[in-house]
Amino acid sequence: MKIGFIGSGIMGRPMAENLLRAGHQLFVYGRRFDRLEPMLVAGALGKGTPAEVAAEADISFTVVSDTTDVEQIIFGDRGLIHGAKPGHTIVDMSTVAPAATRRIAATLAERGVHMLDAPVSGGEIAAREGTLSIMVGGEAPIFEKVRPLFEVLGKNIVHVGGHGAGQVVKCCNQIVVGLTFEGVAEAILLARRNGVDPVKMREALLGGFAGSRILEVHGQRMLDSNYKPGFKVKLHHKDMAIVMDNAQETATPLPGAALIAQQMNALMGAGDSELDSSAIMRALERLVGEEK
Image 1 (tube, rainbow, N blue to C red):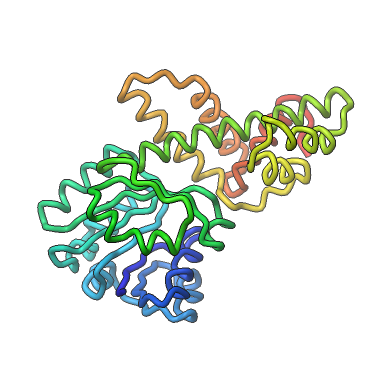
Image 2: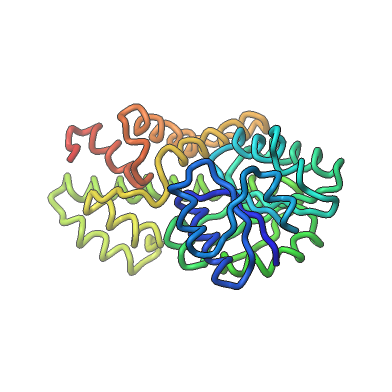
């Protein structure tokens, strides 16, 4: 299948490489050649604009940082819309505001172009291994058309509703992830301040109801103070802003999510934007003067 792909960051590049390994022809665009080069070496064909990408492809994927980037890539002077033929499908796998996604989808529909919002969860490791969780919003027939490609990228693929539903579910995901980070970090801090070995504490918790993938992977990161990014603080910060904006729009009380949003604010203010978001441990350590 001829596929357009725009996004060559921590998540986008391994996703594109998995599509290439599955035998699909990829047309790619990127503003930074150093990020794009590995994809070109792997067999992708570079294009000068998003419009040129869409003109070659039947389906175009976008995996970028925020709503503004998505809108520019699709509707900018040389955006995807200017190369997409009627029947083209744009699959946005970025994390953006649900309201913006609905607006974009409606505008594309006026031009005969389909859209799916399909944000992901699982981080860099799952992107490399093709085991992402993919939550998809949009029309069911379009989802079924794209499903074989999703199956290259992920293992848990769920059509969750109409346009914007995927982004709402991603908001829910970020609440659960953020609060679990907070819980694991608080547990480590409490054990340490009581003179209990946090390594042994984590080992004990992994065998019970407190066990989780976050405790397993990111609990170890926190113990090692290893915050090499898999999912950066600045992206989690952006995502929590989307969550809180949506909470305000829908008058939904989210006190726990508000706490995580403030923890991400604290990390951003301390200059930790490029660290993995499990660095929430640092925010707690600073509160008690134990920063490493």
